[in-house]
Image (tube, rainbow, N blue to C red; front, side, top):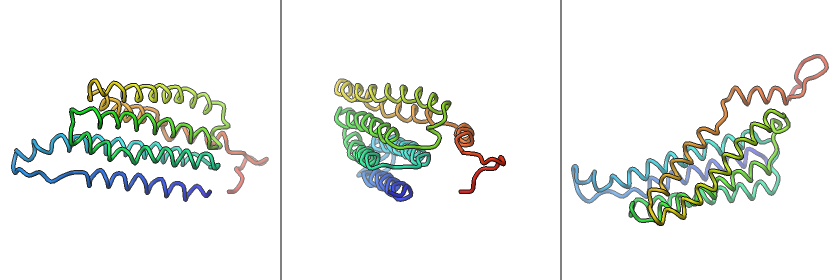
Length: 208
């Protein structure tokens, strides 16, 4: 399938998920400071969920931007990754309605772990020219190990959230932090791309 269609579809899913997060906010019954206290937990959950989905979109977009060939298996894994993202509004609504209840926090942590696992599998099933550069392969191996630790941690937090919901919330915040850390600087990838681009006999890059 054309990569542009996959990117548009994925961006559309993320946009709808962010819209659903806003629609889950409820108008408070009280007025003044009382209304602020009433909606404060929901606003905090909304803000955290919004940035979580936003960071996941950044990572998803970045991964698809590097890919030059998307096989059928990668399409299925991409759909699976997006499925876990669509569960986040449901998890956030549960967390907003009962911040100290374990269900919402556990669902957030589990969805994060399942998304990262599907996302990683999708990226491994796809191919990019920068994957052929030895330095890039070593760079990816380190980050894959970090991603594997994140997956295990998110799933563990999903279970432990039934003991304390704060553990589940911590998993979501940790996922945000790790994805921001794993994001590579643009100049590093540009260097890898230049090394992976074939150069003609006269020293010029072939026209594309």
